[in-house]
Image 1: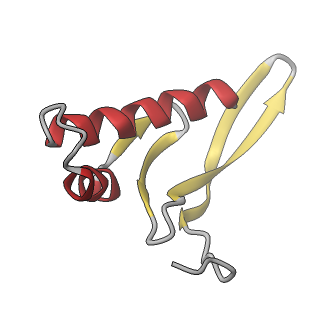
Image 2: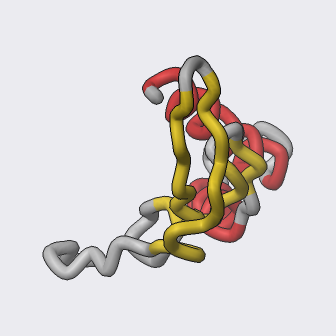
Amino acid sequence: MYAVQGYDAGQLLAAGLEAVKGDVSKKAAMIKAMETAKIDSPRGPFTLSKAHNPVQDMYLRKVVGKENKVQGVAWKALADPARGCKM
């Protein structure tokens, strides 16, 4: 789980850096690019919410013996409402 989060963070940073061609002084443009990025993650594709949390599908899985299989999507495009966030 933690490895995937690091991988996703790297993809977000790469999207931001690519948008500003490595010029990190362009903070607003870098943040905008990260906010609008569509990330293809091992946990499934996701985007960011207004509170900068992942908006992603939650999958229903079933483990039988040694196999872990996706049964379907339990919740499509789940987004944290960030009610306590003061942005």
